[in-house]
Amino acid sequence: VLAGAARGCVWRGGARGRPPARPRVLPRDQRPLVAACAGFALLSLVLVPLTLTLGWDEIVYASRFGPYAPATPFSAPRTRGVPLLIAPVAAWSDSVVLLRVWLTALATGALYLGFRPWLRVLAVRPAAIGVAAGLYGTLWFALFYAGAAMPNHYTAMGAVAAVGFFLRAAPTPLTYAGIGAGLAVATLMRPNDGAAVAAPLLVVALLGLTAPRSWARVLAVLGGVVAGALPWVIEAYVRFGGVRERLVDASDVQGGLRPLAAITAQFTAVDGPLLCRPCGADRIRVVALEWWILLPVLVAFGLWAAGRSAGIGARCRQSAAAPSWLVAPTWRSRTCRSPAPLRGAPEPPRATRAALWLAVVVGVCAALPYLLLVPYGAPRFLLPSHALLALPAAVGLLALADRARASRVLAAALAVVLVGHLAVQLPLAHGNGRIQAGARGDWARVTAVLREQGVRAPCVLQGNTSVIPLAYVSGCVADPRSGPERPTALVLRKGQPPPWARDWRSHPVPDTYAPGWTVLVPPRTAIRNTPTDMRS
Image 1 (cartoon, helix red, strand yellow):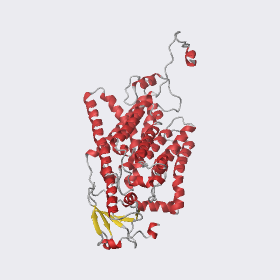
Image 2 (cartoon, helix red, strand yellow):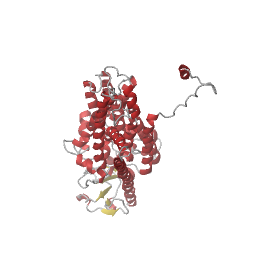
Image 3 (cartoon, rainbow, N blue to C red):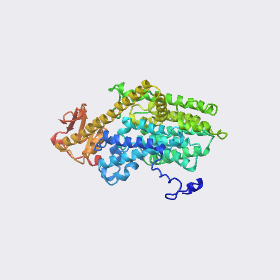
């Protein structure tokens, strides 16, 4: 009413004037993003079963809580971020379904909060944010880990949000808090990823490449990384003797971090398995590489379209009819008629180009450690890079869609590409969920054979694979070492027993998803409970 009075058209029931418009529940620019988030949640719930048994890493995190006890070994590379995520449910319930529902809701909210700051950055084309979230949210490994107790999706969303807040043209205290919060989440989940994202942001802030030099941005970046890394540093001194010692221990657990070319491992694992370690027995499938082929093309076209729009924006006042493949027609017409911007303020298309380039740089920096140092591959490692690169890819996709309006051939080709992308990614999400359900079901089958042979807690297991989850499911203690004390039982898969167990009784595990499981127990007269020192 006050706004109407100021314009001279107060509404009084049936009197002169127009009734006040109903407030919109959801702003128009957020609708594509919300739709992408809803699709992400729905697809993950449909393609990956909520009843999927907890995986190896998930068991380690969940067993910190009483309902999932006893606790399994918490090695040096792990952080306390995931236990913090699952605490509201895992602290009082052991229901896997409830935990996965909670994590799916949490992952969907993280997807929205991660991409939401970019609506201000790419205000010239807000639909690109929903498209970017959709591209990221249809990757099979993003869908698979939506309901998983794993850190990588939250690292990715923290990185995307931090970069989005960092690019705000007119920062406020809330902006700096957003930078710090995003980096704190990314670092809390995976300290190495947080450092890889923060490094280019610090360089950009110190050199003033996207905006005048801002010490507030520098402090926000440093504060976020320090806040996220503080629990890891404290635990390093409490449990490992210091930061250096924990880093060395973490490197040993991961097979020794060293300079190498691991991009082949990432290509091999792009369609599974979840962890390719080692990758020598697997091969690269060309069809599964479609996203790796499509992504650089869309990113390159998005950067080119943004650069072309920036050049056009500088000449916009002289040629209002000049075409642009990035900026929506309504925005372009308003901008071409508007007065010149204030001195020192960049043209919106030019600022968009800088934002997209920063997303590319940060995304590449986040991927380099996994491509050059880690001697194995897993698709989830590169989720932060995929999320950041999805932004310029979305701009490129919309630019192609704008051009396709005038060409039926291009429109048909674009539709085929998008349908093909979904035809590859969605079956991979469902297929890997089915594979994991079968593989994790083998742990229960092995436990049944152990029970038949009289192996019950307290007991110690050794084996050549999956010792920790097998021990957890069977209620035993995992002992991956070959010490002087013999284990209660050996669990092997396609392996030969050690010399000291050649006379042990062998019992094949029937009806397993993966063939080759065998349980070995000592002769009947030698079966005894676990020694006291082993149980402790």
